[in-house]
Length: 279
Ligand code: C2E
Ligand code: CA
Ligand code: CA
Ligand code: CA
Image 1 (spheres, rainbow, N blue to C red):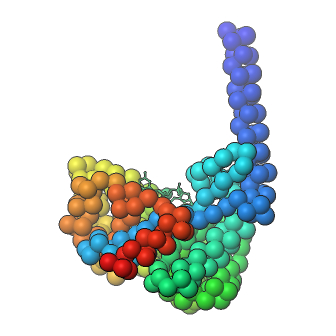
Image 2: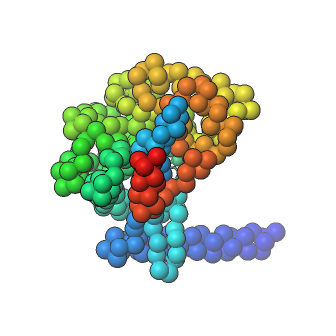
Image 3: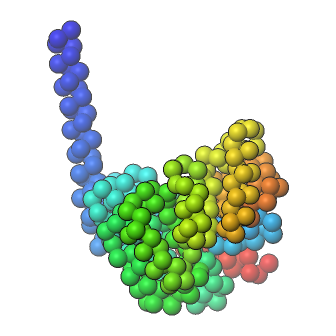
């Protein structure tokens, strides 16, 4: 038994070691990704569910490394957060998303609202409001077309400091969205207190619709609450016609998901914009 224990430990140590090495390798390569132009943004269309019209898009980061290939955000964003690299990556994403919307516009397409994900680390360690102001100024994007998606973890931070940053952002005129709503611990009073504009119903609720009874009841309650607070409500992760119908029927104003469109390259979203204006 003793030697089996030792073997287990060796196995465990080797596995740990491998994980640490992988993590360090990813971190080192990520450190160079910006300078080497390996990052891009894809844009997932968002729709007005009642009219079916394109209403905006969410910018999602993509990393293609020549050695590692395509690395999914669920893998590299946490590493970027732990290492502090997210501050630079996040600033790049803000600038790039604003620039892209104005580039579509310069090509004769309509101005499309864009949502950018912002990590809690960016609130803690960066002059986020300053970065947002610069991105708007450099691109010329009207502030009300930019929405910042925050997760509930942001509100778990030092509330005084967060409150001051959120106020500065509101004063700039950008919109604020609560992402992944229903998965964290945020108190409902925060939604009102911080004057958030949009509530995004997390995919885990949507994926159980329409038959998961508890989730269906909760989803209906969230939609009603968002609207009674005067917030826009976006359901994410809509994959089936039944989910789409359920949300539309219960008055959810907006949605996004594979059923409506996958995230698209800037080029492909430009073509979609072109088609939706021609129609
Ligand atoms: P998120 O903000 O909740 O973004 C939605 C994720 O769901 C995206 O994954 C999107 O591609 C995926 N998705 C959209 N529709 C569907 C659907 O119908 N079904 C399913 N199963 N998935 C769908 P992605 O692009 O892999 O991003 C994962 C997460 O990484 C994001 O979750 C966000 O938390 C983070 N992330 C991505 N880009 C950024 C960024 O620029 N900054 C920060 N801080 N985080 C980012
Ligand atoms: Ca998001
Ligand atoms: Ca989300
Ligand atoms: Ca998520």
